[in-house]
Length: 195
Image 1 (cartoon, rainbow, N blue to C red):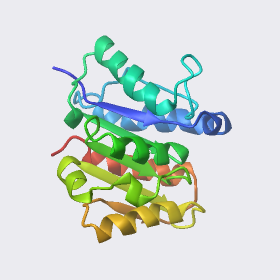
Image 2: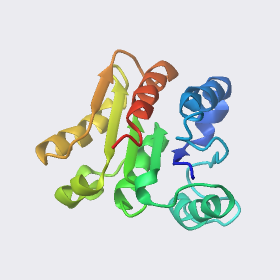
Image 3: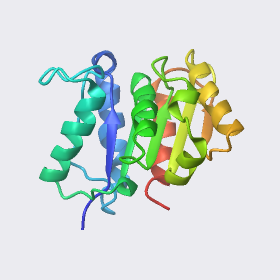
């Protein structure tokens, strides 16, 4: 039996600024899923979010052409898109939307927490909303109500609503910080791999 894998897109400069908080956030919160063999506890990948220093490829190419095949070769994970999620916060949230929605052949579960300005315009993210609706198991968007980046989550939500693409959209009191992200990540993981 394999594990489902959540690929977490992370911005390294953000990690350097908040390393202690992120360690708790990344390593402790998903633990409730590990005993049920839901999320593989080993594959953990951190990148600067722009490119791989080793290959000089774009992060998107590195993720799709190097990281996912590596994990599939070295860990007992399921290999179907239905068993793979991508999620991230801030710049990583934008990248999760950008990469996950552009590659629905690779990801069925996509989550963004306080997506940053690097998030593509909604019409570019989902040029065929009906096809995306049929392929996505979950598209999650959350943000703090006082987050300076709320407009990027809101514009994506508004487009998805207009195009009838199902998606939880969760706005809670707070700013661009770990309290908001922890709550969003917790709720996101409660829905992962359930359908």
